[in-house]
Length: 230
Image (cartoon, rainbow, N blue to C red):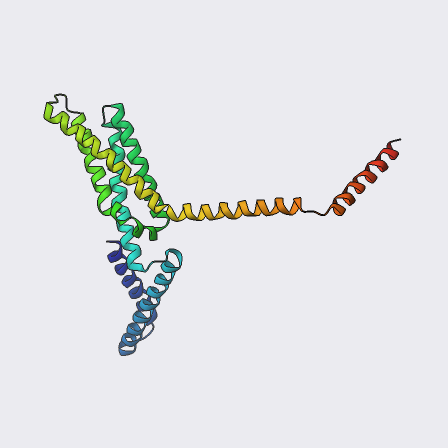
């Protein structure tokens, strides 16, 4: 949808600019100028937009707008999940919905910030999120029923157990999408620890002569200060 709108907007911008450029000319010349201007502006606009998106996100235009559409759908599903806070009746169900909402929101935020990470957890957008929202809504609906027969109670128990399994799946999705950040953090910590160790070793291996010189300087300075005070 976004990609189609982008094409429409680009054509309108090129048409408006071409009409403005060709307006001073008459008849055949105006037609030639309009055609050349439209093609040139359309191509230039397209290339500049592609360069901007690729430089910022590392994606081509089609990939970027496709991911934006997926994020838009995910936001609607997240909103459905958040509306369940007021629909659940038990404390355990509320705790479960809060946990699921937190996981979904964190994954959504990471991909929104860096759209390229969408390809690292496509299954979340294509399958896991739908299952979570549908089962959470089903669980909330069953828990609100005043009369619960044996079959309904069993169905509610199975739904909650499945949601617990999906919660673990979402945790795996979150770890997967954050794997690069964790790896970079680990590398940075290793580098920092090595620097600290190198500084400690350098300090320990200072020659005795230099240490004695430092002590003499401190002693002399202290003596001078003492004399001044007297």
